[in-house]
Image 1: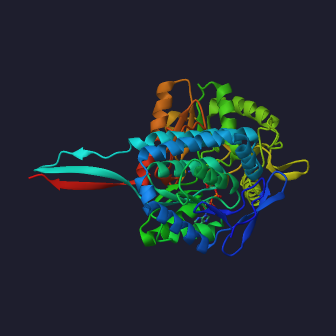
Image 2: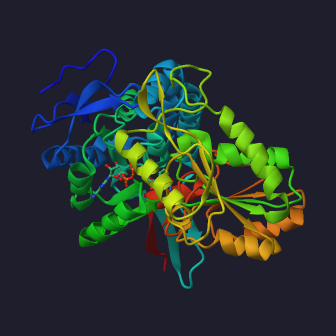
Length: 487
Ligand code: NAD
């Protein structure tokens, strides 16, 4: 049964190329977090819908049409999808901003990276191939690199378009088919991306998109025996649950999880650049960024000067209407997330950290789930705000005096290992620190840089497997060894 599709928002499930209602008829109200208004209600997939989507993806994967489609043809379609995203830039960035609360300029950055990701993997599609291996004896031995099958992709709400593309693009490039479950808060751009994939020439069923609740639709996808791999981005807590339940069907799993990333500033850094990097490291994306530089680790001799610069700039970062192109700080994604962040701020206060600026809820025209840019100093490594991922605009400043060794020790004092920043004019010192830090990405004299060609993923409890770059391809194919007797 087809749902009424609103002029502005995609509101159905996209299964087998058709927009359909959930079998149960359930829908979920989607809210614009900057105005607190309901903007659409979207079909909520249940286990039946997940089953239907997986069967479609499986049938498509096994169909002659899909199996006959050459790698080059898949690549051309991926490239076309990248172009279509750029052609729909205004629509998609507006949808992302209305849905997530991030400013328009950030949605535009996400859109560009998303389009770049599809084009990058479009380029890879016909460059993935096996080897011939010089084995003993009169044998020809060669390898085939084959797709895994049906990929269940589960993504969070902070970068709805780009994080989905990081999984879908390499998966399609390698010849897999997809069932994507976007976060319940942010379904719109994922659904539009799946619609545009049809326009780009992917067959119905190659890329299905099924919004729904994590505990229902997400769990059903993870448990479904017809899914060969789960590619997940989200919290460490849910990642652990996914690993456990994927074990029953021996599914392959890749996990991109949380972070508590250190941003280290040495006394010999360009302090102006470092102050700017410290701020964008934590306040870009309202701090709802897995790689947010949420622990600022500053050499004591420059701490006062640096804090002065940071506070002055932070006070000028006033939250604004995300649809205004000039706005630099948007609304948090939901009331629940805002309350979680305010709870962390309260714990920072009660555990004895010094609040330098911010610390309160904010609003635009009296509405919205905004939080002021918030900075704490005198943070001890044992405090909750130094250990737990806050996922909001809250910076914890700590200091060190013992050079690279102490800075790295403090940086590594976390269960996470997603990213890190290092600021120094001494390149040898910076490179020594980069080696000593256990994280999947290290930025030197910059922060939050991404490129479709450069791998991204976690050490320690930030997960395993890599998104982006050639490294992501490994996660979407398997190797078959073929022996031929030539005697
Ligand atoms: P979350 O783990 O609650 O949800 C992520 C996704 O998992 C959503 O689609 C949700 O519906 C689904 N889900 C929830 N419970 C599930 C279950 N039992 N089974 C299957 N799926 C389930 O995370 P969130 O709050 O939406 O997102 C924030 C988290 O994502 C943060 O911890 C952040 O660090 C992390 N993140 C990591 C990266 C990275 O690349 N490492 C990038 C962005 C965000």
